[in-house]
Image 1 (spheres, rainbow, N blue to C red):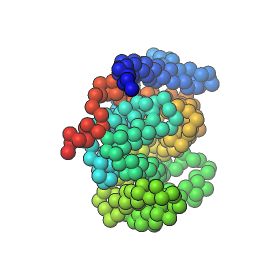
Image 2 (cartoon, rainbow, N blue to C red; image 1 turned 90 degrees about the vertical axis):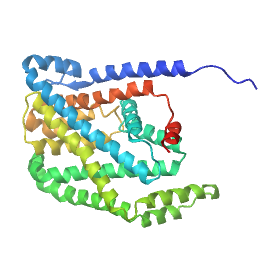
Image 3 (cartoon, one colour; image 1 turned 30 degrees about the horizontal axis):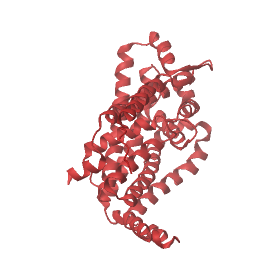
Image 4 (cartoon, one colour; image 1 turned 180 degrees about the vertical axis):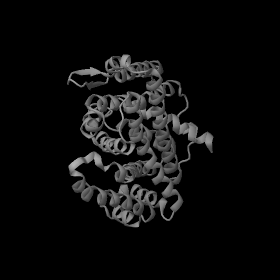
Length: 342
């Protein structure tokens, strides 16, 4: 059999360049509604608002918002590094930073966090050959992420509950116990994994999948009794979402809107939940602005709440365009990196 000598690398490079350009286009053409209900792009909204704003106010707060979001992204990167390390997959941290940014870049085009989660999982499993461990780390990361959102909710709720208005009492009775339960359940799952391992072990599967099932049971049990690691993972998960929610406070300040910090943070936390859970829009576009307007229009005004959400998207996702550059320049495979790290 004659092996094909076609070099596919130029084609892959062209595809990557096209996607990089498309990311810039998507960011600047992100559609929002202005105060009159008309649909405009993020660039148009910014252009219309700029003449009435002072750059000495806009730029510092927008850069501060981006810096705070970057703190959340770094927390998420560190969490992924720790999860893989506990599972025996020891990539260099800087390599995972690149992988993470590439995943966020790809995720710009896909619903929810599908691009980021999918690429990180693919890269970790491809290089290490540890599929069960990589899948377990991904699943636990999602559970920890949910716990992090609820922790942010619980921390900001006491001082920000007024955002719910006349429904505050009812919402408190429902959400606070639920959020507390999720956080406690997550801690118990990590520190006391035997019930989950037992359930996985009892799942009836064909004999050829027995080894994989044992790998999953071992992977889920890797955190048993590791209190410091569990607390670190929980804290990092809190920082991921708290930083994102706090970012919107500073994007609001950048356009001259003002509301109590904890009110904006709590309202933005609800918006984050809606954005993460929505499978219907690319990168949460549209859902973010709608929920932000519902939560914070009374505090910030409709146009300001929508524009602050749009600027939050721009400030957050613009950072991930670096991932497109890393994707273009990366040459070594994850397997080569892991072998060189040993």
